[in-house]
Image 1 (cartoon, rainbow over the protein chains, first blue to last red):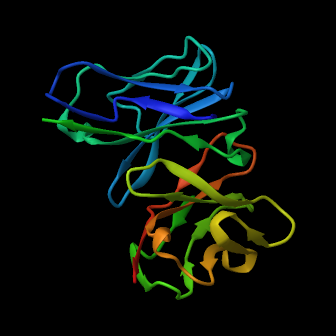
Image 2: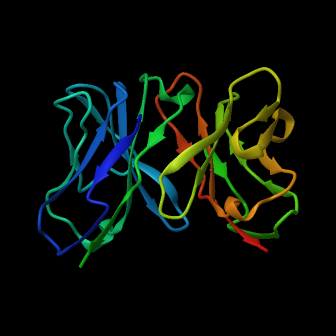
Length: 115
Length: 113
């Protein structure tokens, strides 16, 4: 089954404790992206990757890191989480990099609470 | 400034009633237009998309959307809502020849039996 998976689905942590949220897709997609969803703000893009070893900042990259060492995986790293990073996070992928015209496929989301 | 507006934060309808969710965008040229649905506890799923051609687009689950260039709108419609349509709906636009996808703030749909 074609899908985007994220782990963990739920995470409670404390300020400053490094964490990683994994994302994996099995569709051989070139483009992968991370979004955060906050009430009243919709989805905002954090980082994206056009292919292996190619990443770039989205609209709200502060406090986040990413890497793309393999085509299927795109982990999101919070080196020192803060309470304002409490949010619902989505990973997404699409076949090609010109994403304005591409359908994006979303993972189920990771709900993060930073105390 | 480029923007996507969903003016209705929350809509409540009775099962069987018709539905229209509004979406307006502000861009220099006609962008690519999408509607996504997020069911409770789920990720987003594409309902339909518009690139060019016929301005009335059919999607999954009985939804359709109409692109109106003069109004910069891409409203989502369904003739008869089912209880399972309760979800949050996001309009998104992709400016032509870019890598960006800009989401609206979403409309939460509640369906009463």
